[in-house]
Amino acid sequence: MIRTTTLAALGLAALGLAACTNPDGTRDNRATGATVGALGGAAAGNLIGGDSRSTLIGAGLGAATGAVIGNQQDQRQQQGW
Image (cartoon, rainbow, N blue to C red; front, side, top):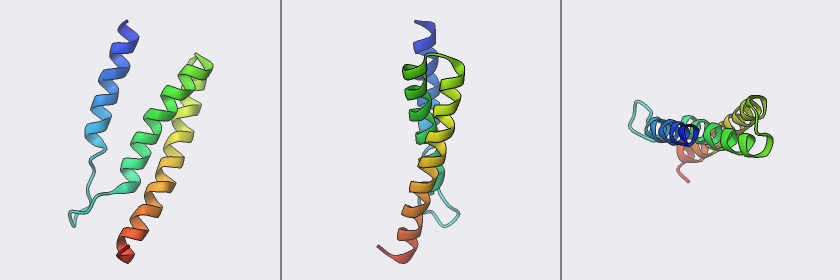
């Protein structure tokens, strides 16, 4: 129960950070994608592997994937899509 509560609290805290913005006021999709991807990857890694190593691997892969997708969205946003 404590582990679930801790993960939920960390998740809510990270979602607050996920609302990152650039200096011009536009949303920073790369940072948001990395944050949300890391959380999702960590959760998936923990569920699949059930140990710290799997959780860290999942968080790393999720953060990298989220950052790449967010960066692509940022580029489209700059081009006016």
